[in-house]
Image (cartoon, rainbow, N blue to C red; front, top):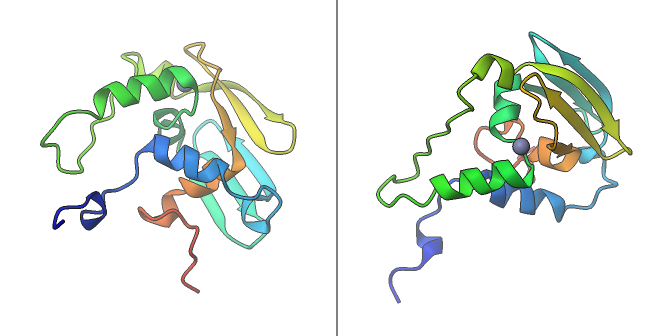
Length: 147
Ligand SMILES: [Zn+2]
């Protein structure tokens, strides 16, 4: 027993992050936005009740679309041996349309749904997921704040 998967920690895939995020308790300040702002150039800005702030470029969000179709697509790409933690994300060919949004709406009080200019609109971004993929987490999940 010298080789266990946990001996080689890999960055989590989006799908592992989605599952991790959806197991978190919803009603904590960490996952409760107090300010939401979506801008065509700047992307999505969220201020959280615990004081954290997140900025998500639109392409960043589209690449991490949580809908079943996109998850399946990513899944089929991540099974290449020898990639050593690297991941290649391929956006739909019409990148401009794919990372432009035409509409967005809140879903209950727990998620935001974005309609992209290429017509894709099935991705519902749960606030817990957004917090977990916040670019400011620098690869971590943000679930264990260090201060
Ligand atoms: Zn999608």
